[in-house]
Amino acid sequence: MHLQAKGITKDYFRKGRGTNVFTALHPTDLNVDGGITVVVGKSGSGKSTLLNVLSGVLSPTEGTVLWDGEDIYALSDKTLSCLRNAKVGIVPQGQTGLQSLTVKENVLVPFYLSENKDKQASALAESRADELLEKVGVSHLSDSYPNELSGGELRRMAIARALLNRPEVLFADEPTGDLDEENTALILRLFREIADQGTAVVMVTHDRDSLSYADKIYSMSSGVLTVESISEI
Amino acid sequence: MKFARTIAKNNFKKKPLRTLALILLVAFLSFTAFGGSLVILSLKNGLDSYEARLGADVVVVPYQARTQGTFESIILQGIPGYFYMDKSHLDKVRAVDGVAIASPQFYLATVSAGCCSVPVQIIGFDPETDFTIQPWIKKSYTGSIGEYDIIIGADVNMPVDGKLTFYDKECRVVAQLDKTGTGLDTTVYCNMDTAKDLERSAEELGFSYLGDVPLDRAISSVFVKVKQGYDVDYVTDRINIEVRHVKAGGAKSMVSGVADGLTSVSNVIGVLIAVVWVLCVVILIVAFTMITGERKKEFAILRILGASRLKLSLIVGTEAALIGGIGSLVGLGLSLLVVLPLGASLRTALSLPYLLPSVGVIVGLALGALVVSAVVGSMTSLFAAKKIAGTESGLLIREDA
Ligand SMILES: Nc1ncnc2c1ncn2[C@@H]1O[C@H](COP(=O)(O)OP(=O)(O)OP(=O)(O)O)[C@@H](O)[C@H]1O
Ligand SMILES: [Mg+2]
Image (tube, rainbow over all chains, first blue to last red):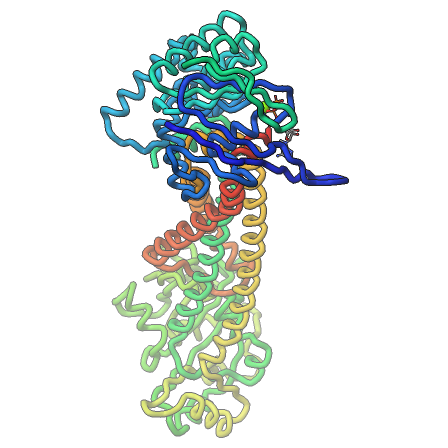
């Protein structure tokens, strides 16, 4: 998928004294066609804001986000939700397990939401879920509930969930934040693998290890995005 | 949607206490709706059967009895009582223009002293002319009614063929009548001769009820059927004008006092239902809003993973609908358990006729209450659903529980 952001900005309205409009994202252009794109930057610099706007869950104050040439924020909620479900994988910042579902059910949520009632598709999704849980190393926790998992295990569950529907773009907000070196490497290798298979990966990170896996590196500072390095893809 | 149900069920399992509380709230809705309207309907039904059992167009009683309301308290509340007038009034009533049939009745109260088995109201009717009591008796007894044969109301505790003693005279129960939900259920019926014999026996035992009316000339009331084509009010007025020392009243107007009482009780129940409903609906709205507030993040995740606003509302709605359905059923069951057995004590408490409607009506009422409270119960989640669905998921996910 070709992802293009044109002049996107994001203002937040803060409650409290003084100026209550806060610009978290200054006019930004960005193109993603594939490979691994990494955004680094200080806490509060606007990385998550950027990722949310790009991934179709937060409308920009100005500018447009195009997925394959389509202005996603001009689409109906239903169409955009469908697109997000089918073509985009999102690993949000923080812990995002649904408490009432088991780990495996959590991973299957994108399939449930696709409303695919086909028996065969359902069986396929199940085996894909097993396979992904295996890959991120939490298959032994399939039947546990999120409150029984560690932070790092939950992150990996969220990654498996984001990949279930074989997205064309994966947005990951600090996917390795809670992970040890070994698991960080595991996840980064997984990202490399899917990127090589054609999924564009856009990730936000504080982790310097990730940079060696990146094809493009941006840095974010006070809402301004600058290119750090681009390696040949 | 299967997924919505799965989410709902799992959520219930995780929060059993909260789910129970919500179910109870909805149960209140159907409990009051069904229980309240069942009571109102039973009162109305009781009134109808009272009207039917009274069976006359006009009732004539001595002036005093009418003004003191003795007649109503006998017929309606089953408080034993008596009053008498001279038989000559009967002939005068018969002579009034528009009177088709006029039949006398003779009232006698029994006492709780040793001479009587139970304190009840005895009503003696004239077998020749009676048109109000005998049709009812025929429903349960077709034999002849001889001397010292009695027919008892539904609430008099004695099997058929049992014996009851009044003023030292033994009477044989030949039949028992259907329930009316009024004082008539504790009444004992017999023919005029038996009633007078009992009265005589009472006088011999030292009770003096008759006053200066000689026993062979005493009657208590005259039940009148109006000739076809005549207006009941007109005939009532004629009797009041032409016959002195009596008070004629349309049977309907006697019932109207009851009807007024019924209206005010119905109003009170209506207000109670409304108050409970408003309270429950407000609490439910607040509860659902709080719960969805707590689960903001969960909903944000669902949105991010591709749930549309509509689907999110559906998920919230499914949970509410399940709660609404189960809660309504629980409330219905509870009110059946409470209202049905309490019928009798309600009747005495309200001193109004009270008779349960037919099973068909009860079932219809139950279904109505079930649907309405389930729908209203689920609708209370709409506010919460709307708020959640209306917030951008990119913002929602930051709002930690
Ligand atoms: N809903 C909001 N309302 C007001 N201000 C907000 C809101 N969300 C974010 N901000 C502000 O916008 C700025 C950027 O936030 P953002 O979450 O994008 O930072 P970040 O780079 O992802 O930080 P971190 O690395 O800590 O996750 C922060 O200063 C934050 O306070
Ligand atoms: Mg962030």
